[in-house]
Image (tube, rainbow, N blue to C red; front, side, top):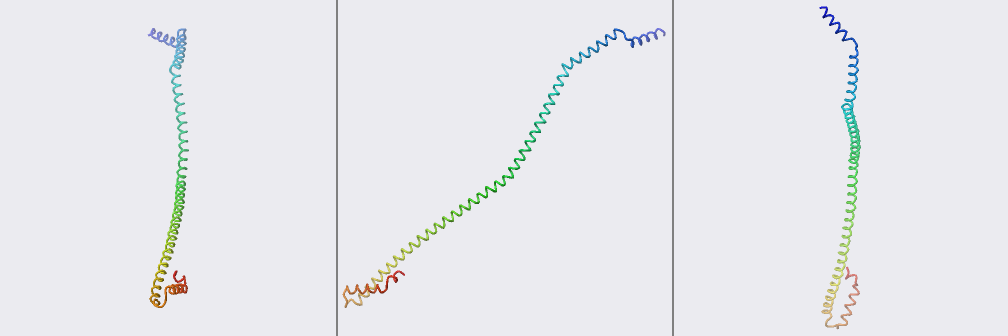
Length: 182
């Protein structure tokens, strides 16, 4: 048992005993870890960092773009709402203009109809006057012929035609032109 304890003591001594081999192994291990870290950092960590950095920039750009788009959409929405409000006003203006034009056109048509009616009435009055004159002339001729016949019958035996024509003219003058026109 003494040898076993002595071997264990040597193992403990060796375990905690700093010898040159242990120090060289430790330094090499630290250098290896450092080189491995630098190598992995260059080959693995930097690309991963760059990938994360690029992704962060892309996400930031997407967020900025989304914010700009949202702002533009809000502006467009406000603009369209304003247009919708103005559309009612524009529609009312258009309808108002159409009503005014319709009223002007109506007034023009009524005026033209009145003018046409006045022309028709004027023509009708002129034609009535002409017919009245023709009728008066016809009545005058008829009365003259009847008066001639009657005077001719009454005075035919005693008066000659010159005296007869003189009497007819005298009678017509006494009656006057006013009688024939009315």
